[in-house]
Length: 195
Ligand code: GLV
Ligand code: MN
Image 1 (cartoon, rainbow, N blue to C red):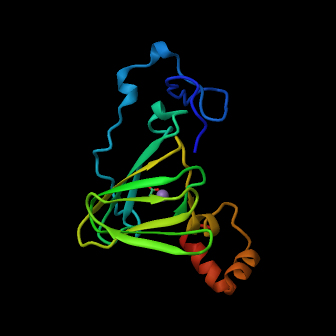
Image 2 (cartoon, rainbow, N blue to C red; image 1 turned 135 degrees about the horizontal axis):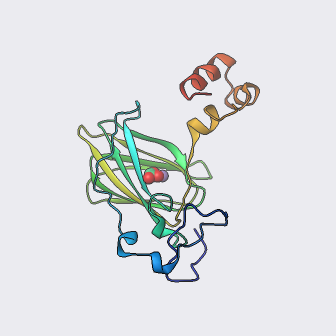
C-alpha cells in the first residue's frame, strides 16, 4: 500500500528531471479533465506469446493521474487456455473482477498453502499483498479480468523471468542447487526466457 496523499491530486510529471518516491506533479493549471479518464475498453492482443494473455496497465506510467493516490488497475485479456503466469506484486494487494471466461485463480501463502477457485462473469477475487498468484482461462472462449491494486505502481515479480531471464543471468550453480536439477535443465529453461 502506498502512503496517503497530501493533496487532492498530483498528476505525474513523467518527464521531470528529478526522481522521488513517486513522481512530481505537473502544475495544477496544466491539469484538465482528460487527465482523470483512461480507456480500458480495447481488447489486448493475446497471441504474442504461448502464454496467450495480455496485460493493459492503468498505473502511474500509463495513467499519470493516479500518481500518489495509492490505486491502479489492469485489464487482462486471455485467449482460450491463456495464462497470467505465477507472479507477485511487492507493493500491493490485488482485487480482480472476472468479466468473461472461466478463470482459474490461485495463490500460495507464506505457509505454502495453495488456495484456488474457478470464477466466471461477475465474480471477484482478492490476492493478499505480495503473495505469488496466477490466473488461467480454463474456458473455451476468450477471457477478460479487470484487476485493481492499492498502489499507483504495484510492481510485478514474474517468477519464471526473474529466476531464468535476468540480465545478467543468475548463476547456474545457484539455480541447480535451489531446484535440485542439473545444468541441462537450467539451461533449457533459461533458453526459453532469454538468459
Ligand atoms: C493479475 O494477476 C494482475 O496482476 O493483473
Ligand atoms: Mn497479479
